[in-house]
Image (cartoon, rainbow, N blue to C red; front, side, top):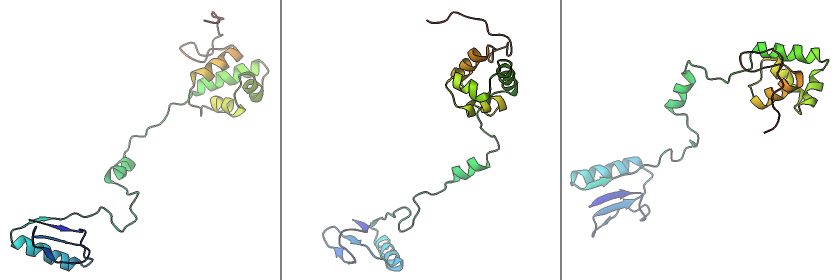
Length: 156
């Protein structure tokens, strides 16, 4: 026979004579502990279950792993456009007589995108770099950064 705490019989600590199971929900931990000890002394199987964080507002708890991640020394970050590329964009834009806003309009991007690429704050995007390369006529990717862009085959 097993003792189940938190059963359907409410707050009644009466034993069911057929199953010899004690089923009750009691708010007093001393009474519960005494019932468990008495059942163990009689040699009965005792089954208890506790709700995790019952009665507490612990929907979002901080685990040990979160704290470990906070203490982690290695910083993970995205690669940024090198300053060399930013300077090439700026020189190419100025040699064509374009402002950042003019270049942005020409390649259908926001002026802030051009400013970010020139300052080295932008995360490299090959589509944007390709559009800037074609607009200023200088290579921005690969080994020959700053060299004139060769007119390659257009289309597919």
